[in-house]
Image (cartoon, rainbow, N blue to C red):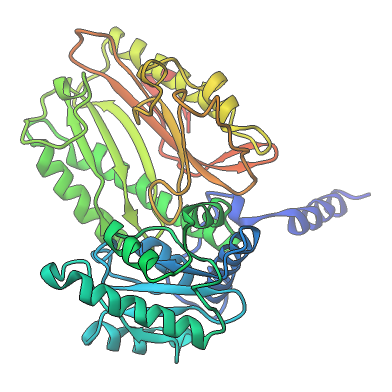
Length: 435
């Protein structure tokens, strides 16, 4: 076999086996083009709707009533501009064998959705918004239930007999439904289970979102965070960069420095950043068409690391690797918590500190479950292929004037994990080209 023939065989094998969604360096552009299939949005919408229906079927739920904005977007592919998430101005019904129905805020918002979402044509209804009706709450809420009951009946579901599940509802609205004899059941687990496992298209969206995070970190570290800038100024410039890159909505940035990193103040203040300050930046909740990343990096501003800073950084990095080593399809959250996370206050109080923990991520910051030594060991969940997870850790010594926080976003596979973020860790502390 010639050298060319051997290489041609290698190309054949590559082309047959390559999965673009598993390669973080192979990201698509963000334009719509005629020469390449990138993210296939109709296919992605169909996948997500089918995931909800599968989870409904397992629980014998005839129809799902979705009130949370993330869930409504997941089921319908419509957008609430990220400010109507929990204010009851829009909601949706998901049936087994009929297209979902979106109830949209009346007026201009309904007009915009009618223009923008042709896949929902004929299935967009006016929303009855009861939550902030004050003294009219009961009256308006009853009209809300009149509407839900009638639309379900038109679609072959009797909600006084068949189960109608919901993931989020006001307690008084729940009580009104039960008084009317509506068979309303708590069904948040339907959405949780549906959103666990990502499609090929969703993984491509996650790659793009995380790539923007990498670029944001480069900008922050190399151009923005100079001695003399305030934490809040740095955060503002970072927000501008994330918006320029394509994030429709950015919320969760934290820029903390110096003493604000130990104990870690998870907020951004007017503190001046000084030479030699350790900086922690938590870059989260940057919505790229609904998909978010949640990353954390630490570095020293305008100076080389001290020996102590290097030591703490190394210890933090080792904790991160310990956690990631347990991320593999077939493992459980219990194994990850027990063998991958260090003892912390989670153990003492049986809760989650959101410090030494992991979580699923996707179309929302906490999409499904948290992993904590406080409860995951006793109540494990099996990790599945194509889940996307964030693992985050923190290290500091009591009394020091700095701490280190690190976090990665990864795809769960049968062979372990694939890192989505490629912004390098600090060469001074852990060596060259460590991604």
